[in-house]
Image (cartoon, rainbow, N blue to C red; front, side, top):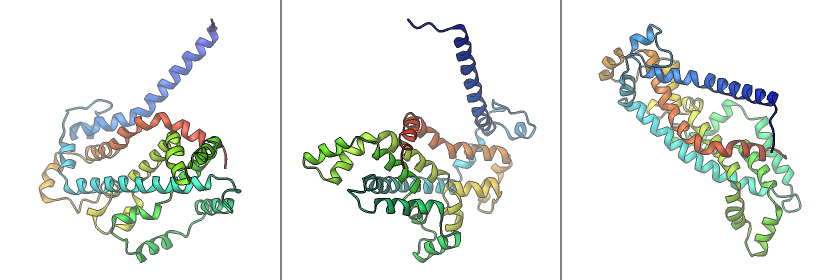
Length: 293
């Protein structure tokens, strides 16, 4: 029977208390935002709201959920996240699998890898990026938010390193049974790579959901903005030119802070709902995908 010394118990207690305090410290800002979003504007302006709503009200949420532009941009983001994530995952797997092979199986494999790495270190610049998208006629199109980043190179490197760590006997056994590379990739590599794939999936979804700069540059109409770009115009720039006349009275019943808080909560909610299901794979996928080049 293993006996824990008193000093070890004290050390463990200190660790638990420290981690609990750190966790609460990370949660407090978001809890405060939630409390502000459910509070009356007068209480928020007076600084009475900390971690519990004062004068509980749903007017801020009623305002943003009745805002047709907000709902439209929310839908635009869903289309971007779903379409972009599916395309990113498909291309990431199809690029990472051949690049994970040895030079004996894929000639110039090292050259191909360095070409992808080069795109991380250097790029053509913002103007070239914009002109290229414009030349293809993608301005003000949802495809402009998806196609330019169709192959996320960081995710490719993460996944190919994970593939390289898998036992080579699995691939050899698959070939002996008559399977080709396509079958081996989808029937063998993908099912046993769930930790790495879940990590890449989380990176991809968060990137698409939080990205706002490209929407500001590539979309000409507010109705075509993704949610993050729309929130940037309202929360940061305070641009209310697109607000309808019937919403003006309701805006008088809420404050700038309560409206901001409600939009932040709604904008963060989908990722917060998805993250717990992928979190258990996250650390394992990062570690296993970062061992080799």
